[in-house]
Length: 171
Image (cartoon, rainbow, N blue to C red; front, side, top):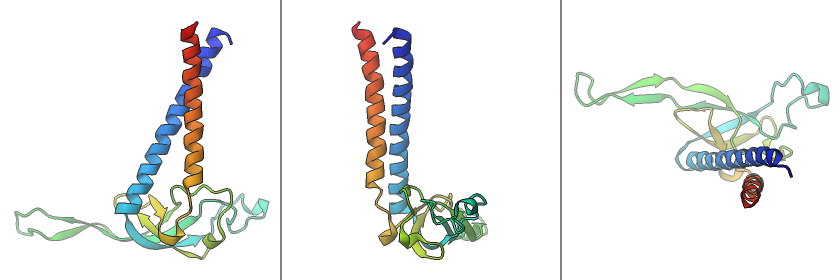
């Protein structure tokens, strides 16, 4: 392989592999944090209003692998400082709101039968950003296979890029 081509290919593979591994680590950390420290809620799987779905025979959005979830996020409150006239009282920062969100880490090829529109599922969401949600409990999809796939792909790309750079330095 010529030197400019090897440098370009090595740079692209190294950048892609490292970015993919960084994304995988951040996504795993976010899902783990939400499952441990998130606020539990019950969500309803909502039919996706995708205007293009009807053309392909998917009227209710059942073929989309990541379901659209609807749940009510608890109101966020702020406790006032100890000093002052209203010491230690809580004041609402944000009222309860209905949130539509897709769960993180749900990437199977087809949506499981238990996530059809209208089904109720257990979720955990971030209180500061209610649109960050993961499936919890028995409704948690097995994401190990997809996590391993993306990690192996990122590691392979990074190894390929570093291998190209190593072959250039060996010459």
